[in-house]
Image 1: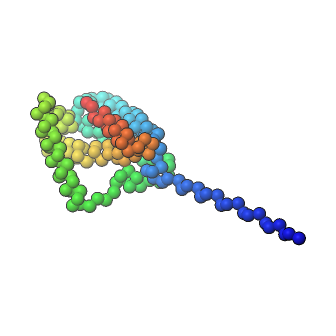
Image 2 (image 1 turned 90 degrees about the vertical axis):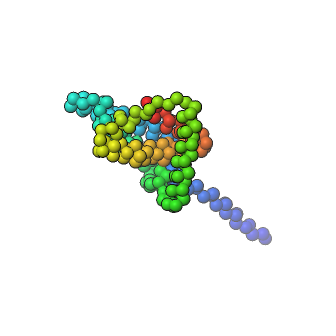
Image 3 (image 1 turned 135 degrees about the vertical axis):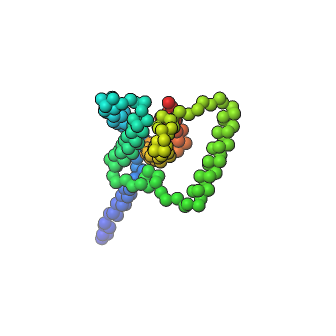
Amino acid sequence: QWQQSPPWPPPPAPPEPAPLEGAEGWPARFGLFTLFGGFLAAQVAIGFLIVFFEIGGGSIEDPAFIVLASIIQSVVFVAIAVAIARTRGPVSARDFGLVRAPLASTAGKSVAIFLAYLLIFGVYSMLVDLEADETPDKLGADSGTLGMIGFVLMASIVAPFAEEFFFRGMVFRAFANGMGVVLAALVSGLLFGALHID
């Protein structure tokens, strides 16, 4: 008499893929949400600032207004990027590309990039009739030492940090997850350039 052998157990189910964390898990739509949310929130905040300035008898041509508006935009950009990123869980500075870099190699690359910029700008200025940039004066650089310090801080620290955080740290990273690095770099670069059209 044959004894029936027990059936083989079913094969184990394949493991569930671990959810992507941090910047790797940001979908491309996060880039769009950040763009529209950042610009809309900044315009609303600056709109309130315009009202306060006009009630107080100020002018939107006043360097103090322009500096305050730039600071507000910078703060809003960073806040919106962090708020949208946090909808997918905790975030860190590394998610936005803020990592420690070796001092010597970073300084060397910075000098090389600056020299390349001077060379390209020199060639460009010979080919194109450039007009003087009025941005420093608009930001109060011509109103004394304090104005110059404010301009330097705004132009070299506050605005660049916020814009890099917003565009490269969030918009580019989210776009890259959905459309690839090259297309994301082109799209986010064009949008970044459009922000600076006067």
